[in-house]
Image (cartoon, rainbow, N blue to C red; front, side):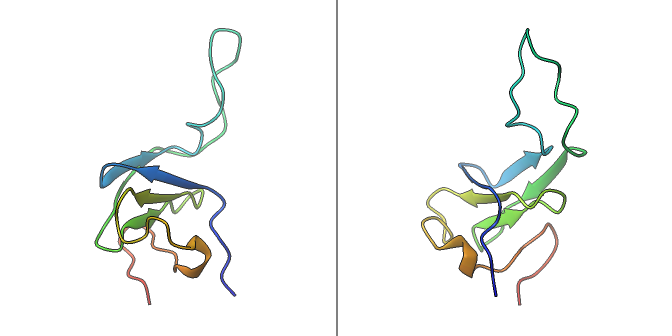
Length: 84
C-alpha cells in the first residue's frame, strides 16, 4: 500500500535544497527555527520529482511528468535512488 508524501512542494528548477524547517515561521518576534535537518541539495531527474531522505518532502517539477499526478501512486525516489 502506497501513501502520499507528507508534503509536496512544486518547484520550477531541477536543483532544490531542503533543510526541513524552511516553512517554519520566523521573524523579529520569533526565535529561529531549531527544528529541521542538515541542508541537503537534491536533483530532480527524468521522473520529475525527488524526495528528501530526511523529512520525506517531495519536490515536484512544475510541468514535469509527475506534476498533477496522484502522488500516492508514485514510488519514493531519494537522491541517487532508482524507482522499482
